[in-house]
Length: 84
Image 1 (cartoon, rainbow, N blue to C red):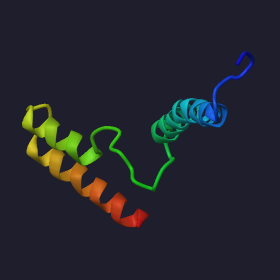
Image 2: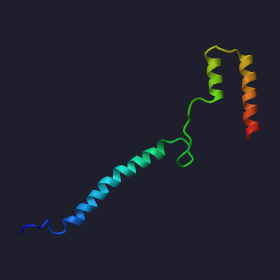
Image 3: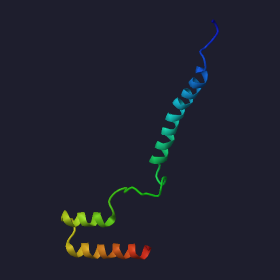
Image 4: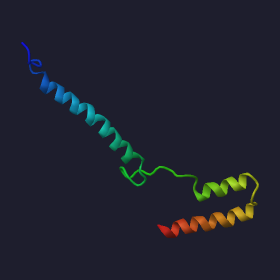
């Protein structure tokens, strides 16, 4: 029979095509939402070292002495306590 395009395959073909295009589109949306800063479930990823970690590293590397470290650490802890 000329002119027949299969028995019921058109509906399956359209469904398959829809899934084919929906899957990459959903993946792109998910990646964009995941990579944007401030988006998601409120979970924060660390962007770098905290001020206290940097200060500790400077002491460990010998860049500052113990008295300077204690004074700066005290100021940082007080500032963090005042923010809360």
